[in-house]
Image (cartoon, rainbow, N blue to C red; front, side):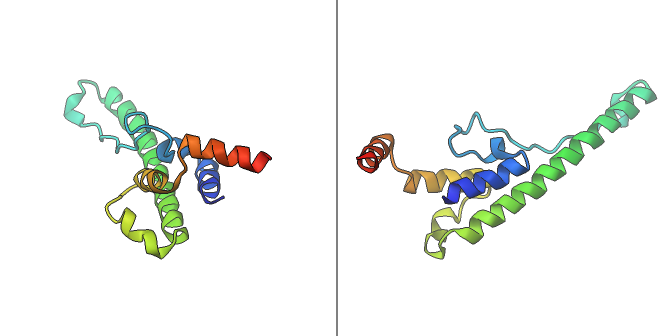
Length: 121
């Protein structure tokens, strides 16, 4: 199934929590760019150096997530039918695209239950 392939790719890079369409918008993780520490904000040079090291680590993680998010976004766009590209034209993130597609194509719980019952018989 298509979404399982997207999930598998996102899981492989540990970013499913950033793109999971089942999460509500206020629950989804966001990849916000960390702010570089300003020297003048620190009285002590050592504290500034430590803050800068922490920022470098955080920025490295931010960049990794950005790269993987771009990869997932490309995968989604390349694997959906061109006739439905118009549906996602205003969506900028994988999460937004998956939410739009889920709202349009995923069966509601009642329909899904009926499908399962039909398939079981």
